[in-house]
Length: 120
Image 1: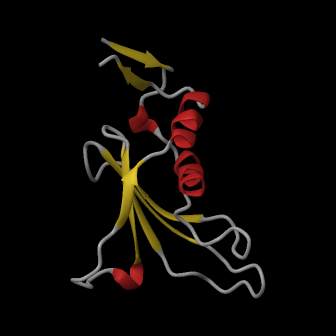
Image 2 (image 1 turned 90 degrees about the horizontal axis):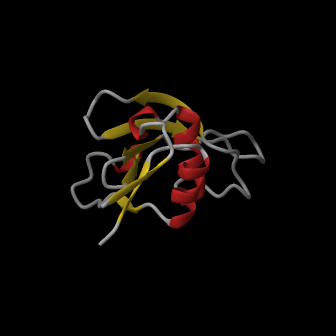
């Protein structure tokens, strides 16, 4: 049995929704020293189950721009990973990623998205 919560399809996540997920999951530079992430590109048609966004931050002290990050959010299995621009092309680099945490699930439910709950 699957219980669906909310009425907004997850494939309709906005840039702001994804920016909040990035903040919740800690996928940006420390907000103590850096501004919140700024979205630079948004791709929601590249994959059937994954939304891709690019983002940067600016350091609070001197407004220096951070490296660019690319964030992949698979909304079908609630997994994400991200990579920094300077890690692209490095054969030894393993992307940072995992399944989303409870805080992200709570955020998605609060925003009205159809987060499926499975009875196992």
